[in-house]
Length: 109
Length: 231
Image (cartoon, rainbow over all chains, first blue to last red):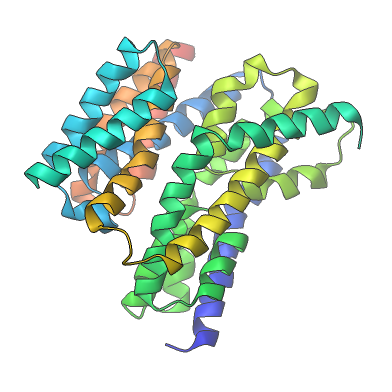
């Protein structure tokens, strides 16, 4: 694979990434912060984000693929418990989740 | 630039340097390692995050390059992966919109819209005055972008130095952070319903259509919640 080919791939990736953002700004002209379309788009956006998280936990790609699904789900569940116990302290809960996952992965994977 | 703009911008930058920046940098750190293993050089890794700042699309590009995919394959695969940015942008711009601000400012700002900056802004915009939101988001998004670009290069050069088990734990920070952010704002029935439905639907749809599962699960859940709770 030549360097030029990789540079072309990077530029095409940038175009394919900016396009939905560009179209989003264009379409947002017709959306009002208090309107029903805004609420509908909120639902879809949060839905996509939840689906993305779910996919990373259950069907990840890359390095996480080599870890156990049970460990990932156990770490995520424990983090949710800690999040509520800590009165929704995101920093503390996120760090707990990562350390707990790291320990489980170290000893049981 | 006036003083109020500067202060809001600075506040956005400082926010990005906290947990949002740490979690995102961790993911881009891993991306740098992936790029090295995929045959990219340091300049290419740097350029990729600089101009194509959206991690899942960059991962898809690297994976397609590994299997000698064509440029058309890359274009389509990345577009489908990043299509989620379309509803996210439509959702965010009305929140940060200011009267009398030229439209090209929003097209410029759009480059910084990614999951981390979007989640933070959507979760916290009610605490920020309408006039301050644009400059705050500019500070937040641009700082996250710079941190990610640096983290990609650091990840590229430190591949192999860090133990694999620690490396995997670092990658786990980003999804865990997203999960905490999303759970912390589950206070509206339509959002709660969407999130739960989508969380269950995505892995099921993955079995039938891996490429479309995220978009389909999010869209179906969003439509169902909208018709049940809002319409």
